[in-house]
Image 1 (cartoon, rainbow, N blue to C red):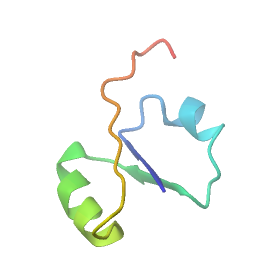
Image 2: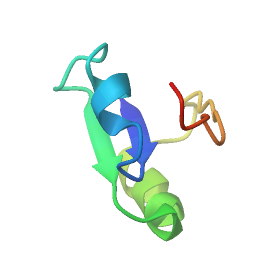
Image 3: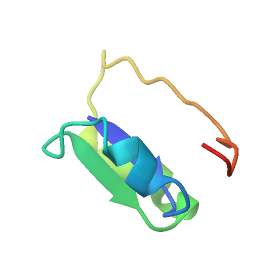
Image 4: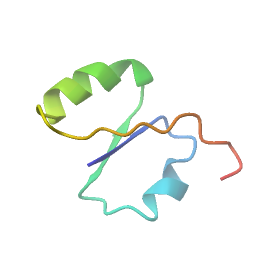
Length: 55
């Protein structure tokens, strides 16, 4: 599963991601509750932060 926060670069990033695995959050504040709901103990979670606007 891939979680993208915000809509700024979503169209560029989602072009290369299977839409069945993509989840877009409108607000970063919802990340903690989304991770609690969608993941389980033992899952590997990788974070990438602040992709530049020119992607």
